[in-house]
Image (cartoon, rainbow, N blue to C red):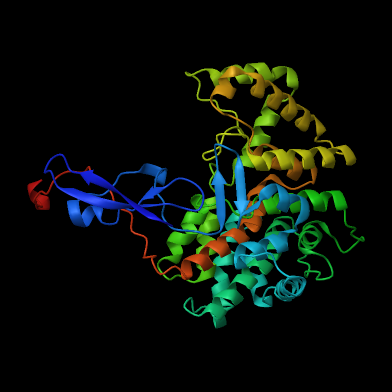
Length: 431
């Protein structure tokens, strides 16, 4: 980064301060405001951190105007076409594509950690039979620190790496167990003869009474979803992981915090909301009335799966996943095809309507990922769980990067106090 400066003047006092301008390798330049309070006694106000950089990062780059998403400099389109989830995870964690030896060693290491401690299985029985799988995920992932406390020294690079491997490897097992607990199904052991995605589908859907077979189209669709969701810069859940990490909390607690943040309907729950919307619309001929409602400023109704906080162009992930959705539904005997027909017609109308075009309300990745999950027979309460599994690679990468960042301090956002001024306490009998 090369430094220039900008001068800020306090018009009340005439005092001035020169602030450094930080120029990234890609993206917008940023003003370093750390001297602002010391020199002028001022903080900045930025609800939702829409214009604030909380860290420097080498991991993910997004250009929302151009619809660009890069992992460590590699376009998401190339990774989706040529890579696999574990190779992408290695790229995010270690910063480079692995050599054949590095890749096979990494895969072997992850497979060696797929099982969970036998006593940990008792945790699943402690949850109510109809508990939401995300509630189970938050609790069980947080509890991992009670079983794997041999590598919790966050200041030890080797401990951090071991914890990272354990988290990545055990997340599919925990996710599948969360689903099976709710349906009274036995908890299978992972199969290390299968790849990462195949093993998760096996643990989700296999039963002891019949042989389970791999569906390559389903595996391809899930592989794409995992790669596309692996990281997405400083979103709410990733920022939550970093904020929790800034206190020195153990990695399992930090990832559990990220899962809790992802659970929100405005974040990880968006693809479930898309399915509910499509089911509410019901048939393509009813689409115009829902379009009209979305355009009515006096109606609070919003179309789910359109627009994005960052992307002001077509979400690059949506283009990739739409093709996978087409491929999946065309090769499967799926009862969910009508939903996809509604989605395609809704997309066509919205992209031709000046109201949506002028506001850059393009379909995002959630618009089609929910259709894929539905076609694969995934319960809707598992949609966000799968998102959490995929995003684990990104959370781990961000956590590892933060642990090595010498500039990071414990997170402590400032506030604008709007309460009453100082006042004296009045005794109870005098009020």
